[in-house]
Amino acid sequence: MVIFFAFLASYCSIFMIKPVAEHFGLVDVPCSRKKHVGSIPLIGGVSIFVAVLVSIIIFIPLEKRLVVYLICAAAIVLLGVIDDYKQLGVKIRLCVQTVVALIMMWGSDAYIHNLGNLFGLGEIELGLFGIPFTIIAVIAAINAFNMIDGIDGLAGAMSITTFAAILSLMAINGGQLTVLPLIIIATIVPYLAFNLGVLGHKNKKIFMGDAGSMFIGLSVIWLLMISTQSDLNNAFSPVTALWIIAIPLMDMMAIIIRRIKKGQSPFTADRDHLHHVFMRIGFSSRKALISITIFSIILAAIGVSGELLGIPEWFMLVSFIGIFIVYSMCIQHAWKVARFLRRYVFNKKRIQEKTNYEL
Image (cartoon, rainbow, N blue to C red; front, top):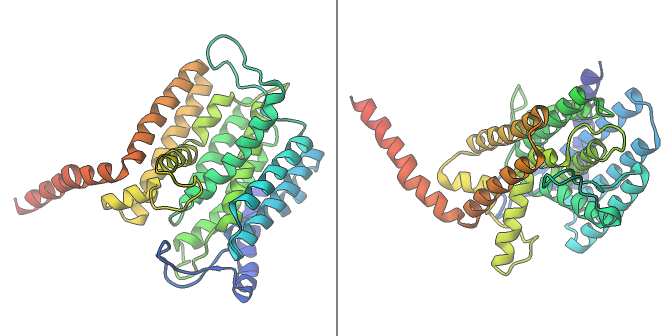
């Protein structure tokens, strides 16, 4: 019942909000960095939030931390809408995100104070240092999903992968508020149908917008925090959270490192993200989406499997760092990687296909 309601609420919200957005000019206009055709309404995130809000009010008993989560989510969505409508400065966005992080910690009575047994020597407690650490983590999660939103369907697919992994571990290990990630997944599906133009939704494209990607990031970090920092029953270990959000997190960190090395601001927009690399190689937007989604599912599955099989946390951390180093090196040398794959992998594949056809 809750899945159907959340899905329907999201679907109806899109139809209700779309004409309002078009009337007030909340649309994405093509430019040198954005190659889509026509002005696309930036309402995906707003419709998802509205559907989540209504579904929670109807199906989940409200408590203090849930109310505070909704207040923080509303603030982030409002920030995103304003940023979509009129580009805000980085400092303003970071200030609001910091305030939201502080309110969320206070309302949830929780912050990231325990990093788990990362080195095999016992639990690592951060104490009060966990407060600034949590602020950084909240800002990182919000902006990681914001930065991954570069081609049709990617932010939505990454979100569903992440929430599905959280849902599975919460359901198996007895986490709290298990229904929440299920609700969010159900509200994202209608957005994807419109965004990708599938199932009869061709020529009805909408974008998620900053409101949506930031809302997703906030929801992810909140669920990760209450699932790993409970004093009674954690659904999974903190290191597992890294695997669950692996692609958005690694892409953001690799890009920031690349920009700093080039003497640029970490928040400078460019075309060096993972999906850009795939498209330089010769992938279409849809093939890049499928490939990155599969990669994300594999990494999330490794994290979930490691948690369920009881693999030592230090081993999971070392493995994650190893994958990140390889990933980061590929992003740092994105042009060389793309050129190599185009020349020596895809050209050989085309030649082989041509030969097979002629034979």
